[in-house]
Length: 65
Image 1 (cartoon, one colour):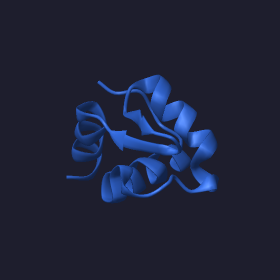
Image 2: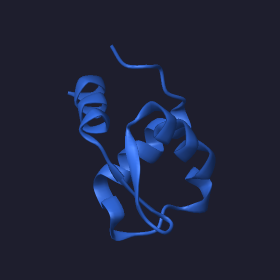
Image 3: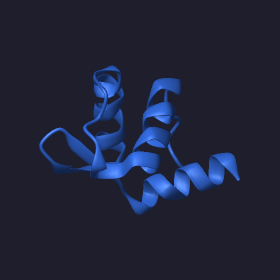
Image 4: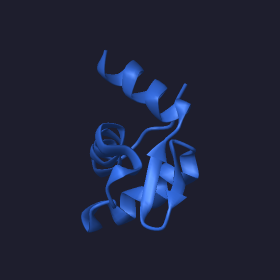
């Protein structure tokens, strides 16, 4: 069972899944990033960069498959 994410966090997680650490995270996702980091769905992969964890992929798979 996964925690409930805000709509902004879900959109940020989808963006991170699509683009990964290849691009800096958009400024609009900064607040959602804290939520995702705290829940273990993403990790810092570099300065201003994050990547999705296996739990993050599982959340998206469960929610949208």
